[in-house]
Length: 140
Figure 1 (spheres, rainbow, N blue to C red):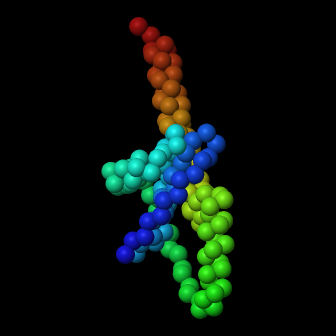
Figure 2 (figure 1 turned 180 degrees about the horizontal axis):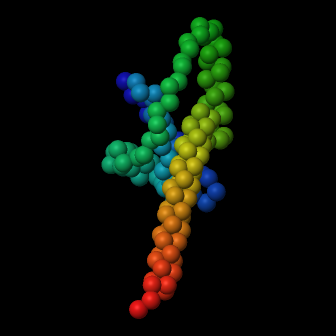
């Protein structure tokens, strides 16, 4: 069984969608920038046609512990949570943490890749310079 949660919120200049997926593999998050404010039908259409195109991060194992609580207390907490969600439609902190980790991992990978490309370019230029120097000293 897979559970999917979509949160649309305004961040800086753009409307962003955070899509959380919980299934047997674990918990994964994907982020999509909508640009302008999407309407409900647009979001529905996006989910139907482009959900498979979303790039979810690596699934993380999450532990869910079930505690027995007083039903009235649970009702109060649910009501408070719903009020909190209404006033700030931000993704859950777990989703934010997972997205932040993914962005950091991608950033490190991108830096490693560009550094390797830069070093390869330098090596290529050095070998070209060496060949030119040898060519000058050969004589005709």
